[in-house]
Image (cartoon, rainbow, N blue to C red; front, side, top):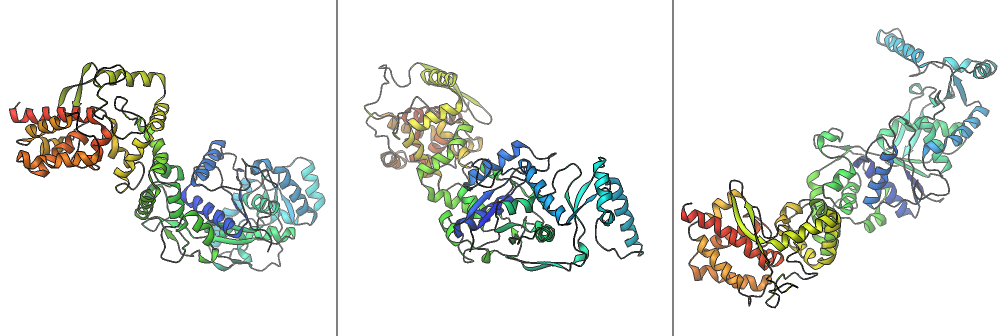
Length: 569
C-alpha cells in the first residue's frame, strides 16, 4: 500500500466549529493509526470572507486540541505552500493540461446572462414546457470554435473556464468508505466552472489540484461534500489520474434533530476552551460523534484513539451533540488528571479572575499558614501589623471590621509593579503546593475548569469574605451562635493549636457537646463565616488553606453579624 496521506482543509471564513474539529480529529487519528501523514491545508480562495485572523484562530484551536500536523502553513512540507492563495500558478499549469486535451473551454457568458437563462429554464420546467436537461449551464459556449474563442480572448473579452464533460458519460459513481456506493445521474451534471473570469479557481477545481499535488490518498470530510464529489471525480478523469478514496462523515445534529448551530449553544472550539473544557476530553467526546471503539467504551484517550480508529467503524447515522455527555466526560478527565495537571490547566482562569494567594498568609509550598513559631513577620511585628478598617458586605448590610493595613499595602504595591497575570503566575509558582491542595477540594464537584472559580473564590479574599444573605439568615442569625463563634475564635487563637485540617477537625468537633449546641448549627455557622455560604468545599481543608489570621478575621466579622442579631440591633 502506498503512503496514507490525509488532509484537513478548512476555509478561514470563521471560527473552527466542532463539526470541523471532528473532521480534523478523524483525519489525524486515521493518519496515526495507519502510520501516515496528516496535512493541514488552508483553503482561502474566498477572498471576501477569508482573513489571516481566522487562519490564526484555526491553527490555535487545532493546536489546543493537540492535533499535530505533519505538513502545513506554519511547519512547511515537501508539497507547500499550504495556503491556496499562494498556489495560483499551479492551478494555471493544470488548466493548461486540460486545455491541451480539449477537456476545458472558455465561457464568455456574463453573470446576468446566466441568471436570465436559469430563470427561464426554471419557468419552463414549472409550466411543463420542458423536462429540464442538464442542470445549471446550458453549454452555449461549448460549440464556439477554437479560433473564435482565441480571438475573443485575445481581444480582452472576459471569460471563465469550464470543464467539458463527455456527453456520452453515464452516471458518476464512487464507493464511499462510509456510505458505500453513491451514484449521480449524468443529467444532474453540467459543464461547471473551473476558473472564474477573475482568474480565481473554484473550490472543486483547486481542491482536486491540491489533492493531486499533495498526494492525498484518502479524503475524509463531512457529507455536505458528497454533492461535490462527482464533479471532482470528473476532473480526475479529465486529467487521467485516479481519484483518492472518499469517506464522508454524517452530520452533527442538535438535541432537537436539526443541524447543529449557534442556537443550540456554543459551536466553536475556542468557545469550549473558554468555558473550561479540557482538550483531551473534547477530543474524546468529538471522536464518539460518529465512531465508536466497541459500542460501549466512553473514555478513550489519545493513544487508544490512535491505536483503534478505523473508517470501518464510522457510522452513517447522524450524531446528536449531547452537552450532558460532554460534561460527564470532562468531569471524568478532571477527576483523573491529578493536582499538578489541574493547576496547570486552571492557571489561565485563575489569571483571568485575578486569583492570587493573599500575600499576608503566603509562604511558598506550605499549606499551613501560621504555625506556633510563626507569630511575627520578618520585621518582628505581629502578622496583622497596623490595623485598618474594611467592610464585609452581605446582600443587605455592610459591617466594618479591622484587617491588616500591611496586607492592603502589599497587595497595592504588587499590583502597581506587575500585571494581574504576572502576579497570579508568580503566586502559583511560589505557592505551588498550596494551589495544588485546591484540586482535592473541587475535583469531585466540577464538570469544567471554569466552574471551579466561584467555588474557590472564598480562598482568595483574605480577611474578608462576602456573606450570602440567605446563609446569614439561616446560620448566623440564630440564638447562641455569637457565643459559639466566640469560643471557636478563642480556641483557634491559641498559638499552641496546630493549623492543619486533621487537628482542626478534632479540636472543633469537641465543641458542640461542650457548648450544648447542635453540631449542624455550629458547623453551618463556621462554614458561612469562613466560606460565605452554606454550600462549599470541605470546611476543615478550607480552614487550613485560608490560614489562621484570615480565618480569625472572618470569624470575628461573622460574630459581629450574629451578635447584632442577638442584641436586636
